[in-house]
Image (cartoon, rainbow, N blue to C red):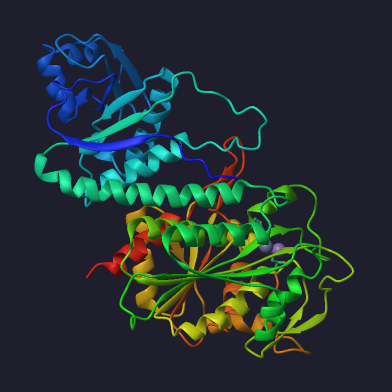
Length: 503
Ligand code: BES
Ligand code: MN
Ligand code: ZN
């Protein structure tokens, strides 16, 4: 299955929009009829036409409102699309991103083939032009993404939007805007890959499918790539990882990706992503409702692949390793049974009291494997616990770390990426809940603080380096009408890596 892009061409321009030839020029309007920069220019050139429309009450500037105008006098553009931005005082990141998404959806539905969007010139507190353009490109992809490769007849758009130009106010801002464009495209493409992998059902997206996707990507961008099969993992002593896949007929794969963008002696960042291609729960089987969603349980691995795609496109000057343990969690005669005890690659033994707590069982061996790279930092990503969704809902990823500076760097990247995290405690007090009478530890710690005890379990395998864990169970996909994979937290990861790659 090829991963399909949204088929749009993006570019940047600067200067006044009243003399812009275009099928559609898009400008922002705040509440109380306050026009943004380019809207003022168009209003003046058209002899106060926009002000007149607003005074007439056709558009109130409320966030989410739109008004499409044809034949505005003395303007070279065929149409002018007004986008409501809400109260100027309340204008912030979310309103900005929402406005860009509204714009793209409106343009798609009105059949414009090409447009110049001036929302990128509207300033936000503490954000620069690069940020505005990066986020606009990501939001545009967000708005137009569709996953219809599995329908026998994909819906055809009547006159699909082909070209989008983002406008900035001054010529001097062009370079910063181009940087934002390149970043936004790389991140959006990485997110699209993560979304496509997440949305594919488990009968297509198997561990082997992920492995061949990684191999293809490695070839395109010149990454190193190693795929460890059952025998190779067995030789390494990955008893915990291998135990999870035993109930499935799909063989496990341990995927290793290497991006050598920095100097040889530079210690790498290691990204570890949970990739359970289907989580039935195993013998501790899950209830039937919503079990279909468990094909998203490879989203951590998908996000690592997405981040690699972005790194490849950007030619990121940093050494990064990606580790993706992948298998399927199924009930079967050969499957793990409650009470089974396995030996992890670290030598620590684990009593499997619940076969549905399988994510930590595959991650722990990947965390031990990470030691061989003498990493500067290790970040793992996993749809690890339902408890995380109960604690934080769908908005932030839960962040756990054994190193405060690393946690702060991730918090900062998350804020810039607008792919937010919320720090959770990793106190020793919780470790007690993992006591086992027969093995070194149990794989579950009871219901209280379920996402924390899961992180505590992982921390026992991450003692030799600076480590952070992101529980993405709440953010990786959304249910309901717009059901599907979100591509999070690819943007956070890429922003974190960009932050580090800066001299
Ligand atoms: N993949 C699930 C976590 C999950 C649940 C993600 C719901 C997204 C939505 C994970 O493998 C799991 O089953 N965790 C168990 C752990 C429990 C048995 C300690 C859970 O959260 O119920
Ligand atoms: Mn599970
Ligand atoms: Zn799982």
